[in-house]
Image 1: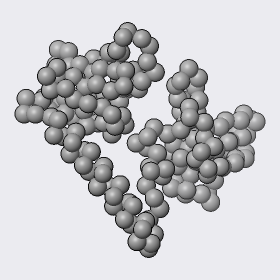
Image 2: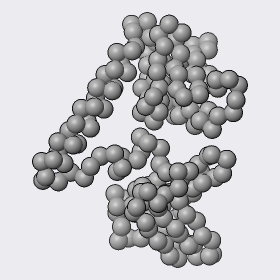
Image 3: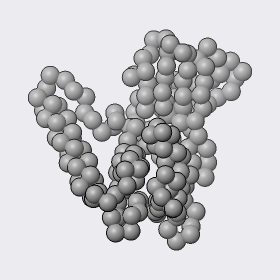
Image 4: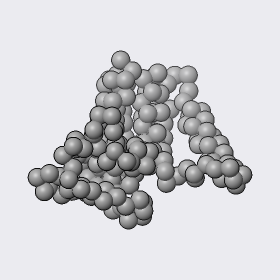
Length: 193
């Protein structure tokens, strides 16, 4: 494992055989050679993702597939983390620079559009949660009238205030995103404390 760097492996499909002959496969979420840690995103079933943290000294053998299309949808990194699929490799080629510049300008405009949907009466904690969720779920929308965040099949409401938001599923159906959004909100709130 010492021959690969973190940047080489993130987002790649990997199959690992441990010293006890346990076989794990998934997408590399992170690799920290200094700490001898590899984290894989694995398919935990029922449309959820799991993470496996592996100490690299316990890896007997491994295979890496850098073809992103070969990774099953259930093991792909969330869109905001899967930067290698979205940004072109930057080289001395002017076309590559222009493509990267266009992508960054489009993302900047998207962020400005999201910020413009906020108004003066929007609570600061609601804005922080909105921007944090919008990084992972780009289709998140803020409703100034209702003071709610809406994405796909989920609504986030500040009840009683935005220091303790509540995640609700539209139509009272089960949603695999509900738990992810709740965890994301906890992380955002803990980072702002």
